[in-house]
Length: 262
Image (tube, rainbow, N blue to C red; front, side):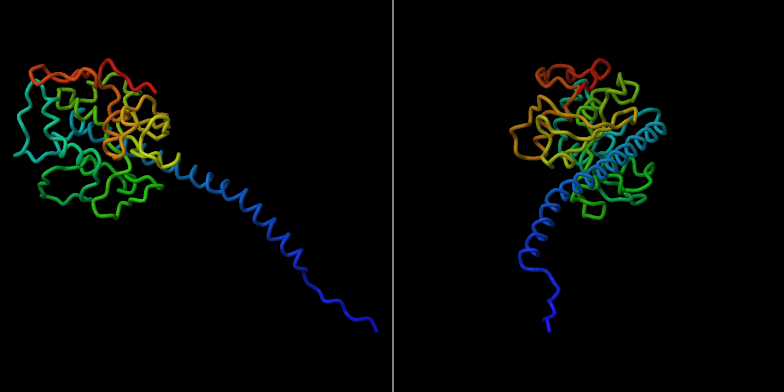
């Protein structure tokens, strides 16, 4: 009588199957990761679009006046802006940084006077959700304790406000005027803004697109904040090489003649 052959895989067959699975995983995992990040990028762009629309609704309610770190400062602490208001801005960079980069308490408490508000607090009444303030690839979330926002307000636009360009109509080429931007390239490596970094940005006319940074003056600086504030993208439309002295009138910034050409 013949002995019954045992069913099952041999060791060699198992090793071959495992090797095939490992090869397939190595091929497919990056594909899945890219697909996931593409979906997050799309969600991020929708967030930026919502922020830009909230900005339009805000200045629609305030006679086309844009939010600013000046308006965000508690009224009793606001300086009287002189002819060189752009230089005065430099004395309030702590408040300006809070306004441009932080979330603040959301929703803002009624009848509460904050020492300085954030742009998110000022626009909150025109938002559907505070979740739109955070990129889905950012480790910060809307529920963290006063985190940095994923999307920062353009520094040059805030500084221009101090120098008299307070209204949306003071800015020419709205389709080329960036107003919100990702301060890290989450969808393209996660590095801070630097030369050749790709980030999503929103413009004053509320359209959103992905841009590639060039000629970033902050590309060699290590601090995220300094990298971003040193050059692109926050100082587009701003002549950093011709800053006036304290005796000159204002900053050499003309938002009617400059557009953010990427």
